[in-house]
Image (tube, rainbow, N blue to C red; front, side, top):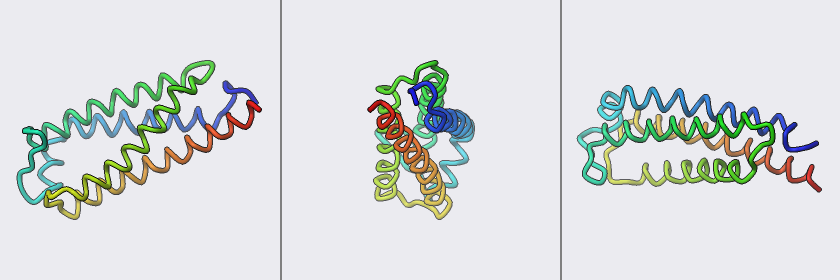
Length: 140
């Protein structure tokens, strides 16, 4: 098996791209309502209200999704970039746990939203890991 034929890794990247772009657009478009639903009171991060942070985060997630789609579309998968994407997904899951530990007064809906997204990202990271291992074992 060569790198360009690894369907697990390519399909996982396309899934990550679709999930990231769709969720990023929704987060950016509905940042205000999400901020109100997620916490019991106003929250600021680095001097920005939570709605602005969520909007910027949503736009960043869209860009990340575009990067995943670009990597998936290459005839030969760019393994260095895919390792970066995998690492970014791991960082997202860890950061989600840290965000839940912040002194913000999260609502049940806010906690559920953070946990559900972190679980989806963790699943994508597991599939990326398996795909990268498959590519690594095929190279030997």
